[in-house]
Length: 264
View 1: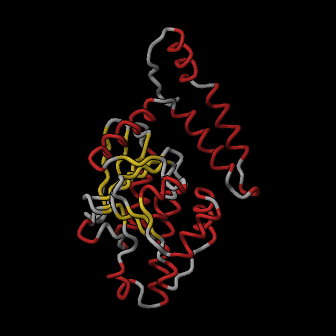
View 2: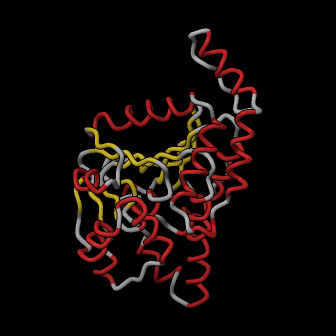
View 3: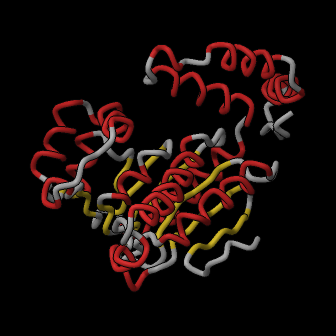
């Protein structure tokens, strides 16, 4: 896969697609070329029937993603036209993450700040190491956040914690994040990758059509009412009951064996 950069890594193994932000010398801050690579990776993973789960991670042990690569702002965001080009790339990357039909997991180690936190909010599950640190420093920078980004955070942690995160612009520990509901699990750093690998493998072994239907319905539950696609949800449920996997699931249950789902 030609990503146009070495700062993003995409690999597949055992039903899992790994997307790795690879700029550890800058705490995996996301550059323009990295934003451009995200939709390419997501499209490839979504189109590959062998990929059943997508995991996002940062290279190294110090950071997941520390936000945008500010060092290139003068060049990449120095004019009105340049700002639009840059923002279009970032928006396309987030749109690709938000549109994913396959389950996604964020494997968070270390720094997860600003844009890095925004990236994790597009994933379905967030697992972090106990040495992780979270923050949205917008109020220290004078930035404004769009409603869509704020709503994602509110949907996950609730309005009170969302206000604490934004109003204080402070740093929060992994345990703080767990209490808020920002992350699903906190594990020791040395166990993080093995834990995520096991979780992703478990999900990968389950019925893909069922997971797809469940993701559609769960996402709809927190969407604005006028955006809920009940027709798509009903169609996904009907596909489950008409699938070979439904037959396989019943047979495996009766035969007391592990099912072998094919996603069709």
